Structures are given as C-alpha cells and as structure tokens.
Image (cartoon, rainbow, N blue to C red; front, side, top):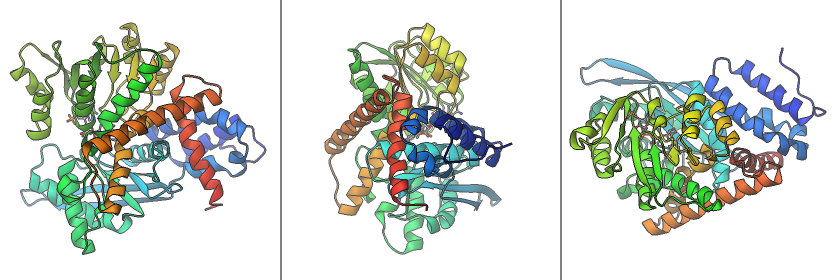
Length: 456
Ligand code: NDP
C-alpha cells in the first residue's frame, strides 16, 4: 500500500512515502526509479533543515513532469518501406527557465530512460547557474547503419510533430546519444521551414554557420575533465603523468580524451557498444576522430592502423585496465558494483561521470566507501548544457563569442559547480561527498523557486 503524504511527517518518512508513490505510479520504469532514489537518499538532511519542503509537498510535485508528449514518427526508408518510430518529449520542470535538455536517438529509448534523463536534467541545469529548466526527449530510432537521406527523412518527420511544443522561450532541445551536428541540422531546417522564420534559439548544438556556439562540441568532455581537475587539485593531485581510461568514443568521450591529454594525462583506452581498445602508448585521438566522427566506423577498426593496440569484444572489461582516473562517458549503468571493486583494487583515485548515470547505486557506494574522489554526472557533465545556455544567450544577442571566451566561461562554471557542491556537502554534514552536495545544491534552488511560484 502507498503511504499517505502529510505535513507532519519526518523527512525520512516523507521521502519514503513519495518514493513509494513514484514506484506505484511509474511501474516498470527502473531507470527512472533509480534516478529518483539516488537524489532522494541524499536530500534527507536538506529536508530536515527545511520543513517548508514537506509543507509545500515539493518532492511529489518535482517527480511529476509538467508535461509528457509521445508521438508517432513515420518515415520512408531507402527501399520505399514505411517505418514507424516513437517520439518523446518530457517537459519536466520550468521553475528556473525554459525546458532544456537533449534528444537521444537510440533503440533502447523508452519512457523510463527519457524520464530519468529529464529528472536529472532539472538539478544539473540548476547547478550550472544558468536560467534553464529541465527536459529531455528522443526516439527509439537507431541512426546507426542508416543513410544520410534516411536520417534526414526521420529528423524531418520527428520535427514535424515536435515543433508544436518547443520554442526559444519555452523548450530548447539539443543533442545526446545518436544526435550530433548532422541530426540537429536536419531538425533545425525542418523547424525553420514549418515556422516560416529563423528562430536560432530553438535548438542548441547547431552548426557554427547558422547560430551554433564555439566550444559547444567540446563542452561536455572538456567540462568533465575540468571538474575532475578541481577534485584532484583539492587533494594536491593533477592529471600530469596520470593514466586515464575513458569509455565510449562519441562526442563526450572524444573531447574528454582531448582535454585530459592536453592536461598531461595518458589516455590508454576507449570503447563503443561492441568492445574496447587498449593502447599502452596513449590513444591516437586523430585516428579515433577520423573513425568515429568522419567515417562513422566501429572502434575495432582502430587496431588496423595501430597494430600495437588491442581490441577486446564486450564493454565491461575496459574497467579492468589499471588507471588513476576513470571517465565513464558512454551510457547509463556501465559501471556496476563488480567493475567498481576492480577499479578500486587497481588503485583508481578519481571518477568523473561524463555520461548520465553511468554508475549503478551499488558502484557509487563502493567508490564513496573507498574514499575515491567521485564526480557525479549532474555536476561533472553539466558543461554541455551550460554552453548550450551560452549558445542561447549569443542567439538572443545576435553575437558570437570566441572559442577562448566560451571556454573560459565553461571553465569558471565547472569551478563554481565544484565549489557550490562542496559547500552544500559540508553545510549538510557530508563533507567531501559530491553526490550529496550536487543533489542538494541543485535541488534547493529549484525547490525555493517552486515555493515562490505557488501551487502551480
Ligand atoms: P554519442 O552518441 O556521441 O556517443 C555515445 C558513445 O557511447 C558511443 O561510443 C556509443 O557506441 C557508446 N554507447 C552507447 N550506448 C552504449 C552501450 N549501451 N554500451 C556501451 N557503449 C555505448 O553520445 P554522447 O557522447 O553525446 O553521449 C554519451 C553520454 O553522455 C550519454 O550518457 C549522454 O546522455 C551523456 N551526455 C551527453 C551530453 C552531450 O553534450 N552530448 C551532455 C551531458 C551528458 P556506439 O557507437 O557503438 O553506439
């Protein structure tokens, strides 16, 4: 039976009662349950100190999206067959500003995945200090193996429905897994055509020739590395001379590899959804970029040009490679308890979550108990959405800032997120625990604004 919610409950009873409701109202949505649990567990000290959050029933309101849209996306493949995918947009919370969050195109996409990502996005966006609310969307369409024309027809059909719900001041999507510059370009073209006008601020991650921001491509990977650098420096450590393992070989991974290497690290491994490569001499990033960004090939091809490297089928083995710093940048739940234990046994010093929710709850527990520096996703990978907000500012002002200007702003934002998360962890009795710190710092701002707006 689901417990009732009252103003008289203790913080623990309240959190449990709302969590029970989340489970019963969103049955089978395991990723969404996991994301809610990760946040709720760390909010208890903030709710104890701020009983007004119970009085205004903030938690039950914040786990309910303001709006969810599901839609049919029909398109024609190159053989003239009619294909049908499902589109999603979850407009989770607009307390701070327009809904903001990426679109994911991957066969695994379903309501649970989009809701977990949208829920996380509320707190991440709050942490950036930028005026953006939380949202997320996508489709179970798989761009892999599709021709450019098929991708274009799909994107046009997707936008033909999505355009009704988005706009520069209401909801501003961007990229995520499977959605890069090509897909954003096709969707922007279709939006512009339907709306009969050029509203540059409706999407971010655009090409530089039509309103995109310099540094947006690099922002999530660079930001993750900057965040980990803050963690390392707080303990008198640095990237210099360290060994780094990065999972994935997509947008976030490539620029995490680039920045970590620039800061003096040797990155020895990366992966895709089929397997991973290990190159003891350090990853040849130009080769990875060519394979993944230009040729759209599998990472296994890497060893054809670098015979001293090895390729291993399967993804989890990458965490058995000894390293000082691990940056999971591929997908959710890619580090489980067992992999976390192996990383700790091999002496890992820091984890920076470039992907969203890449560590299971059990894995996070292992890292925190072992005293490993742990940068949770909503803090460590907030650089992408932060620069998306800077792209919106530039579009509104009809200006373009230089790479150096945007990179400096990104760097400062990542420092602020680290400092604010560290301060919140300290204030609420969990010094050094950035999971607690980031969750509370992100949450309290949204909660206070929701109270100010009344029951809406
Ligand atoms: P990309 O599509 O560019 O790259 C994803 C990478 O992860 C690819 O190498 C892909 O391999 C691999 N991957 C995908 N699914 C799996 C899987 N099930 N197992 C193992 N590897 C997998 O996406 P991004 O780099 O943009 O996103 C990566 C992560 O970062 C996601 O969690 C995303 O939500 C998060 N993120 C992204 C932001 C951005 O700005 N792009 C912002 C904040 C977070 P393959 O090619 O085989 O599919």
